[in-house]
Each structure stands twice: as structure tokens, then as C-alpha cells.
Length: 100
Image 1 (cartoon, rainbow, N blue to C red):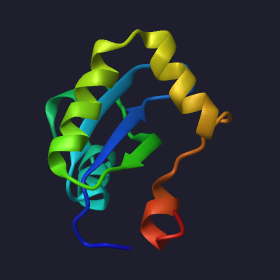
Image 2 (image 1 turned 180 degrees about the vertical axis):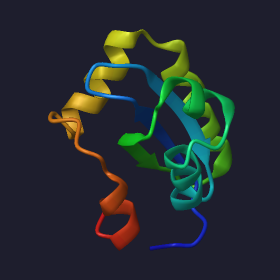
Image 3 (image 1 turned 60 degrees about the vertical axis):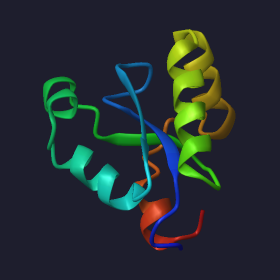
């Protein structure tokens, strides 16, 4: 697993619940922060489950993808999650062990 690689990700509080979309060059650290409730949105809405992520080659590409996802409908976000993770499993173990 690379130390720094831009990624777009979605966190949720439960299946079909509140979804947070973000971008980071250090995905493991950022997801850990969500899981620990550091930051306003995670703490307020309990979005601690990593349900989707996508790696990008550049931060510019990741930011553009994040904006595209955020501009889309909730249905489109749900479709992205369910295409790769239909059971809404927590993908934290995937990014920790590097088997992505």
C-alpha cells in the first residue's frame, strides 16, 4: 500500500443512512479520524463506516471526482456504494491490510 495516494471515499453511519463524501491523500489516517469521531460531521452524524473508496493518480483528479459525486443525487451515491459493496460492509480492514 502506498503511503500517500489521493482517494475519494464515502463514510456512512449505517446501511442507507447518512453518507459523508470526502477526499484525502492519506486515506487510512483520514478514515481513522472519522472512526474516532474527530471532526464535526463524523461526530454529529456518526459516519464511521467506510463503505466506498476510489483511488486516483493525482489530487486534482480526486478533487474533481469528489465534486462530481457531491453534485450527484443520493441515488447515484447509493448506486456507487452498492455496485462495489452491496452489503455495506466496513472497508476499514481492506485499507488497513492493503489488499484493496
